Length: 319
Image (tube, rainbow, N blue to C red; front, top):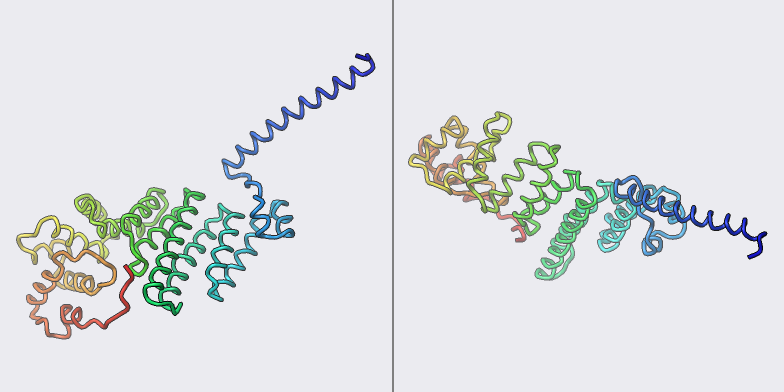
């Protein structure tokens, strides 16, 4: 080898080795940043095509959330125009651009699972069976959208609670086991309010898989005065009745509710709540006993039995 070529060649080899070492370090650091949520994933080719050349340039400049704002605005326009397929596509693009912005997952799941499903059920003009099938399809799309949002934002209790709410909705093909699991995930975050814990217990009571455990947790919550809300008090009574009928139902209502007036008011309102699919074990019997004790006959318009029997017909939930 020509001695004159050795220094340049050695320099080139050193530069190549340094470049390779630097590339490996940069790739390792980039992957670490992406795992920690400090750096976005590179834009996929399909996503670049969706948002166009100009928006791609903006996104590549590090302003992906700005582009997500524009695609979300497009979804809002699709909502007002009831273009549900276009809305779903716009929200998909939005969350691809900003996967850690939980608001977009929340609003997208609501549009898809609630608004779109309701439109197909009541306003699409499709034959009843087809309307039902389309409504169910969009509900499931909404649930899947929420679940993907949860996977991308595992510490956000709000998305898990929103999924629980959608799965609990009597008008959207309820899935109580799925609802209970979603609420449990939200509660496990340690940041969810008490209302989420109550919603989990209500979903578990509906699912009726472990009534003993559910009742034990309800009793634990009821030890605090702020948790002594009518629904939990009524659930305590119904789950006890499901597990073992009390020897004296009237006396047991007094033990749980404190007074006959409160027992009748709470259990009566609970009896009239026919669309929330709450367990009703022993409720009608207790209401009849309480009203008899207060000399309110079933044919009296003040009677909760009378009111229940004369509820106006309403749109039946899709199950």
